[in-house]
Length: 158
Image (tube, rainbow, N blue to C red; front, top):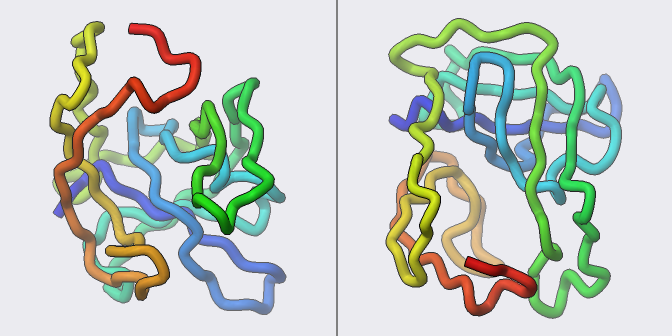
């Protein structure tokens, strides 16, 4: 459905089943963008899954993670339960061990060349995630429209 969308899966030990951790998007055959709070911990127990729209489809493709690069100023918010805000600069890059082959089912997201982002500009979000706080994780990829609100982002300058 959304060929740029990938899923980061994790497991505690090699004997455990893989579980969804977070979404990510391809920006090239080897690199993805995700949230920094998704990549703390050991990447040996994480992998990228892509090329599908339903979590339980059998034809998933697997990418092995080489490393994570989190924003140097990312700090996880200590009070996650209160507001579910994970802190400023919550962004990271994921590098794969080997590049993937782009196909109709997997491709890079179209990034904007616009250097001027406007408050309340609409943007598209995709992923599996939760539809509401405390809700159930969805298994079919969804798309939504949200508005960018920069006056609520600390230290953001246009």
